[in-house]
Length: 547
Picture (cartoon, rainbow, N blue to C red):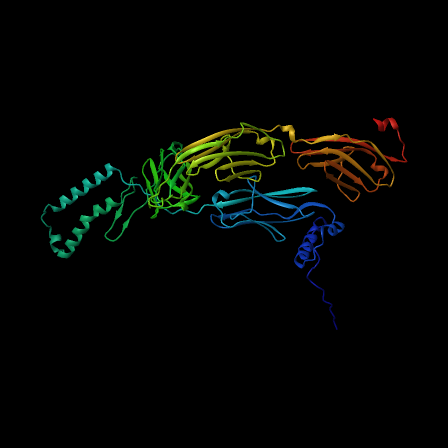
């Protein structure tokens, strides 16, 4: 008799290496979060050892078609739980209607409806007080194929030539000729049908000839076939189209027509595309588009407030594309009580309250520039630093309250110094003012309040070493023992609060004796101070420690 003992074939234990066992803590945290048994911060601090952030799963590169969703996910370990931030091309992303940021055990970044300008580098950054990690991946958004065929009208010379040929053939057909024996044998109705085909054949050809010299048009009794012309030109002779005049910002009253017009030059066939807020604009009952050899117009036959937005035109040829854009603002019409016609009193922007010419900022502190402008209709205000247009970011805010406009710079840094401009415009004019911002680079560096002092302690006793250094921004504090970095552990604990950096040693041993250095650093500079620790019971040279 043969007996067998079965064994489990499914390995239930973790297969992760020892250095990645932190994921078990993350899973336990998620389970406690679902059951509502998550320990408080004080209780957790007794069980969890501090750890810097570590990526368990990194976000992968995403490639999608314009209009489709893009989703990035990552998983991290670390205690305290790291704070996660997402960036695109160096600019931090904020949750909005276009960008979704969430956490469900995994950290997610989602763009439900992508646009071509979303293409770029995506960076995820995680940090806590024990360290910081980041990972960079890419997002590529592919444009949808445009199957629109753009044809140009024939020139006056070509139309005249075609009409002349048509008239000559029509007159020749009217001249009577003796019928051949073969023609007399053809039934009368077949002769009439063929005569009609011959009469209209040149007309069909004339309708299909375009500005470019097309390949020969094949015309049969049943089917007319047109092939797109193939124009070969040496790449060295092709240059980008050039705008003779670009689009200009416009402000209009609701119900009135609006016309955007551009002029351009180029030595190669140029295609023209119009966009509103990044979306293609095509001919429809509301929009009319005309294109000639050197001009193009977009006409809004009757404007509404919904037409407010950024309009752009793109010129393209074999060498590439160029683009021009402008802002359109549609103001609501004001009606008189006794009349249905819109009545608007327009005034150019006027500066009522001018800011001081020069602002002196302090690193780490905010700067607020306030300007009051009066105009009718209300002005559109744009802020610039030099020639660069400013957009809202985590540190820069553009605020508006009635006719008061404010530029707020939070957490000022030396690179914020420069010349700023505020430009207000409406349909009646433009107003521009200049402000200088000066930020001394040294104003935000840490300052050493008092140097560290030598200390001595009995072997086996705890000790706390202090360094008094103030910083206007959150600093990075590093401790050294004889030029070697001291890392946090159960023996060494480090704190920084109210301008005091502390190193706590819970039990001193002879090997802990030496020169201790504290270095306090922020974005604007750093300071350091040193002192010696002597452990009693060893040889002691008073002159050595005094020095």
